[in-house]
Structure formats: C-alpha cells, structure tokens
Length: 446
Image (cartoon, rainbow, N blue to C red; front, side, top):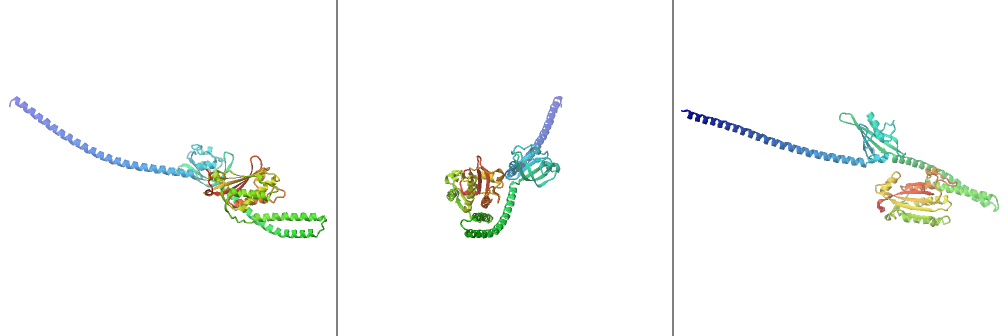
C-alpha cells in the first residue's frame, strides 16, 4: 500500500473515531438533558405541591385574620357598649384603651388619654394604691375597692375599682386593666332606702301617738262645748273657752293630717288623659277656693311636640289631685293669695329622660318621663330649706304642720315618680314633678 492509500485510510479511521466520539458525546448529552428534564418535572411537581400548601396556608391565615378582626371588633363593640369604665395601660404605664363609659364617668374626652401616662390623666392621689399605675409597680391585683374621685370640673364621684395585672409568656408584667363601676346611683338608692325606712318608722310612731291624742281631744272638745253652753252670753270667760275650742280644732286637724300621712294608701292607677286632668284639677281648685284665687291667675300649657299634647298617664286621679292642691295652696300662702301660677307639662324623648333623670328614676326600656312644672310668682324658697322641704314635720310657717309637702312626696313616690323643688329663674318657687310614662302611650318627636 502506497503512501497515498495509507493517508486516505488514516483519514477515514480518524473520521470514524471522531464520529464515534460525537455519537458518544451526543448520547451523553441526551442523557444529561433527559435527567435535567426529569429533575425539572420533579421540581415543577414539588413547586406545585409547595404552591398548593402555601395557598392552603394562606387561606387559613386569611381566615384566622378575619376571625381575629371579627373577634377584635366584637370585643371593641362590647367595651364601647358596656356601662362599666375600662382603662388599659401598657408596661410603661401609658393608656392604650379608654372606653366611652370611662370617659362618661370621669368626664374626660375619650381620645385625649390614649398614649399618655396614666398618672398624668387620671384624678388619683399620690398614695392611692387602687389604680392601674400603682398595680403595675406592685404587680398585685386589686379587687372592688371603693373610693372617691375628684374630677377636673370640681365634682366628685363615688366608684368601685378592680385591677388585673397582665403578664406575657415569660411571666413579665406587660400591662394592667382597670375596671371602674360608678356607684352614684346605687349610693343614692341606699340613701333613699334608708330615708324610706326612717319615714316608715316615723309614720308608725306618729300613727300611734295620733290615736292616743285623738281620744283626749274628743273629750276636751265635748267638755268645752258644754262649758260654753252653760255660760252666760255676756260672760267674759266665753272668749277663753272659744280659744280652747279653736286650739282643739287645730290640733284635731293636725292629727287627721298625721294619720293620713302615716296611712298606707292603696294607689288605684288608671289611664288618664293628662292634659284634661290638669285643666280639670285647676278648674276644681279655683271653684273650691273662689274667695282666694281665680282661673285668670293660672296658666296651663303643654310644651311637648304636637303629637304629645295629650299623653296618657297611669295615675290615681284622687291622690294626684291632692298633690297639685297642696302645691297650689303653698303658692297662695306664700303671697297671701296674690299670685300667678304656671302649670306646664311635656313628654321627654327617652334619651333626654335617661340623661337628665336617669339617676332619679328607674325607667323601664319602654318608658320615658312626663315632666310637670308648677311655677309661682312668689318670693321663692330659701336655699337652706330646699333640701329638707319634703321632710315630715319640717315647716317654715308659724302655724304649719310640716306635712303638706311630705304627703306630696309620698304620693309621687307611690306612683314611681320623683318631685324636685327649686327657685325659678326670675323669682318664685318651682316644683318639678316627674312621672314614668309608656312610650307606646304617646308619640314623641325625637
């Protein structure tokens, strides 16, 4: 084989070797690509699974977030609606929560305290241990401690305070929650109950004494009449006998009034058109006291919206007429008959009634107040007498028994109402009578 053939053979062999290496390389490349494709498919499957799990976890997270938001909103609405004051502070003693009830009880705008130090906002003494700031420092809870707070407007309020100290997972103090109960109404009710118990005891005692006095009075009156009958017409001693008779008569009237006050009246309430009742009562009073007062001296006026000018009130007309009669008589006696009397009434919207008289009256959810004012043009009431005006046997009149207004107070209370005395803006006295009335018995424009 010559050199030319040998060279050609070497070239063919070299090309064959190259092709073999290329085929081997291509096969290796194909295996790598196939392996990568399998890895890619596996990764894609794993990614899909991870993505599915992430989607499910995200859905759960969204659901939990919505539940937490709903629970938070629910708790916020509860804190905003309850009548108990709630104040929360963080570990630094700064206020983080101040609900509307706390704002109302303490007279502090709701947003003002947020983020500010507790001791800077709250009206507490430095030595007061029943407060959130002191509880944070001591780490001790406080349970139902009664105390008196002096508010910024100069008034005071009686409250009951409970405090719970909060801890984090590590046991460290993380804050405190203070709960404040307003005891004003409860204390007022306790005072009212004590007063009623005292009056009941006094009534029983007065009734016993009155019965014991009445029998001798009847004997004195009888013997006085016999004594006067046996005296000559010109006997100077007849004047003395007549004075004795008048004294006995006066004592007998006092005893009768005392017995009426001590008697447990059976209140027979009926539905009454209040406007008609007031006008009829004024007319009856003027007719029965025609020598002392005329209808021109009275003014009866309804101040309520048009739909509430004829409210239907449940009351005992006989007893309640006595209430107005006693008040009218007081006005006449104050100025010796020369008086003008204004009788005005109105039905209050429930919200106004609760805000204005919620501490004086226990109103049902379906009740509001009909407010009646009797204002006279007399000299008014001395301030030192107003507080004791309705107390039995308390009087400023030389010949008064001190039972007229006490009877008024008793009858109004028996109707579930309240009566207040004050001086009017210009001059004269004003009696404010409050009676509960059902919302469905009158239309009131809110």
